[in-house]
Amino acid sequence: MPKMKTKKSAAKRFLVRSSGSIKRGHAFKRHILTKKTTKSKRQLRGMETIHKSDIGRVRDMMPYA
Image 1 (tube, rainbow, N blue to C red):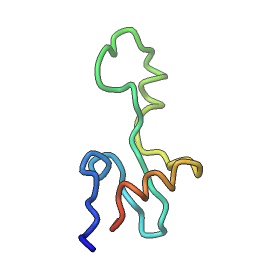
Image 2: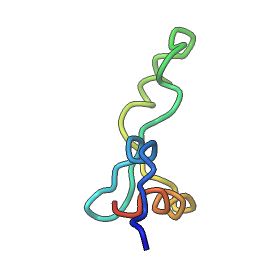
Image 3: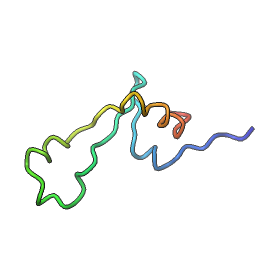
């Protein structure tokens, strides 16, 4: 059986921690920032943990992570 391939788009978006949890960046922080409030932009900083209902889908995209 051939090796499974990692979805490269998923590998660029998600990072698996040593504990096994997966973290992601926030959306809506790339452009059209002038109309967004300072508070909303500040709260989009940093990383967030993937919701438990999405973990299976992300693991399927990254089988060796």
